[in-house]
Image (tube, rainbow, N blue to C red):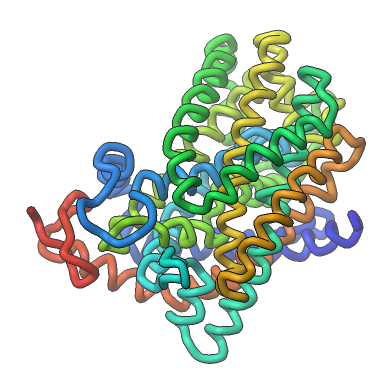
Length: 475
């Protein structure tokens, strides 16, 4: 299984042995760069207003949808603030060296335009299901926006791959990394961690999107702030190492990383591929999940929700992943050995090196909180695709199977070598669901641009009230 997944991952993400970057690396970066140019750098120009709208204003007065702007953002963040921010960053640096963090930043900066576009299209082409909940995302904007046989094929492919991918990126990897970290920190048996995750996540998942929205709106900012403060403390304790850490992150991004300590050294291609793959695992820009969460938002404007959604990529990678990466590099643990089996062990080493046993406990708790939030959001993403494929009848069976896999994934924690197939499966499925979505974004880029220009015509801003999809009005 590991050989099969490794071969597929090589074709999709790149294989440094043959000096190629794979199909997705140039496609992801290319789509992000193209959308950035077509939208005239909207993610940079409107970031302040978007954060204001998402975190301060939070909701529109009268609009259709299931959850508020802020709850939609919190739900999306819950899906991305997971092991990708802890174990994913650790794995990126373990595989590609410090320079991988730079390419995670680049992926995020251009990925903000991708995430914006996904959300705009997700709201524009959303539908209402049999029980009155909003349903949207790539499966809808591919089939409706592109139309014809091509659109229906791309939409179906995305829905199938996404429903399966949820068991990797949003389930098994999360419970695997959590049970491993908790076992190391507290000696808790794997099955107990799995049972706690399964029961806790099951209660929220079975409540549907409104329960998820309420839970994440309270839970996500709390866990994010606590984790950032913890990582910031490590950086402060190693403050003299910060200039050198930033320098090596930037320099190694273009030269590869030489062998040092227990690190074998890697080429530029390995650094690039590792950074982009782990970047998309963390913020999901290009996977299409941003459109699924955005479609549930209470909004009359696809552009306003698109702007809110793009802040998720900024918060996830530019903020949270940066703290993790700099904590690892400044602590000087990235070039050591003994991290086989879990990317989170690299991050755990940084915490324990700087904070002792308290750091190990702190990281284990943070990882458990992050993983828990990801589990409940990806269950929602998966079930929305089941609704597209099979109608509401597929929701309950999917939820029950998803909940069961949480326990199964946790049982593999701390198993020697178990990380490779778990992460490889996530990488392969991420790539397969990203491909139809990215093709669709290229075809529908003109729609995104027209929606955006129509909204901002006449000097209107993101903080203007709206009168519906026909355009904004200033109150």
